[in-house]
Length: 394
Ligand code: LMR
Image (cartoon, rainbow, N blue to C red; front, side, top):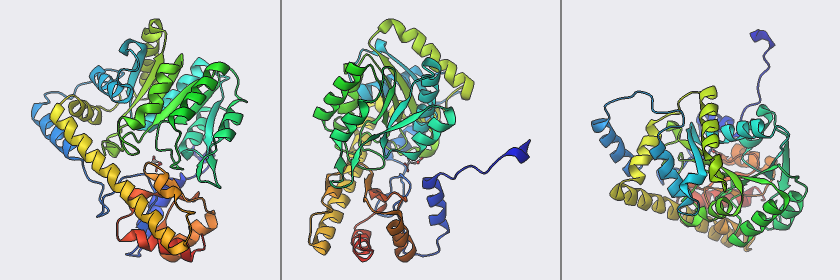
């Protein structure tokens, strides 16, 4: 049987991580995988996570199973963090998943059983794994224009025009904030226009929110997802705690089904539990428990939010520093978008050949579509990157 297997395409982001590890150059710079790093290049365990882990170690008396959808207290805490009071709790079904990717995968499986003929519209570009999983699950993918390569902002007219080709029952996948890979985001007026379009055409929104707190702040980054959850009859939300709690390897995510028909909540909740049971039974608990402890403890929550805010401001400072340095070297404002983008990523908007040149000649690693992880920079490497961008003729 095994001889029938064919080599699977490597995930570009993860393959790049490996090439970086194997590069012997000591001055190499990793702007690849979306993992936060501080100025020393370290991905720290957040203070509140350490404190919660300590407390958990002292207090936890059992590692027995929790529940197919995870601990309801985790769902409650996350729903409050993401949706605040914009939707009644009784209108939301939710299940813990292994990371944000797990939530995305379960959402696609749910679409497949609820409406096998639904197509999923994804932004061009989007996180490559969205498309990979959609193909794997067997759902037709359609792209909608998103990134304007001239302005490095959102091509909103193109987006609207393309979404108008979707038909009733199709799903539209949107990034809640900090768009991955572009860094270009929707404003509240644009969110409302999309909501009106979704409602007029009977389209189902699915929001992937993996970077809440990395863009304009914890509350600000949730504006779009809250508007969609309260402004459409049904939506799916896939959330990740990997980045904003820094618990990447703990695999902590949540899938929510929001419906304006509270009577459907029981059925929806049962469907999420069923999907978990089919795929892995019980979702991981450790990360979810830490998140719950932090969100439900005033002091831990305040400390976590403060550390996250410092991370956010640090990345904004790096963005501004890079934009300023490129302005100085190029004598033009063509890189000003770097300071306007939000989140961990920016798409530089250059060719794969020039991305490769940066890697080969300068040891600077970014994803082939020219996505840079801004958190991979520090005050010392900002001028090095700016000079390399100039030298490469970008
Ligand atoms: C990324 O986009 O780099 C992250 O979401 C990590 C991943 O799994 O690809």
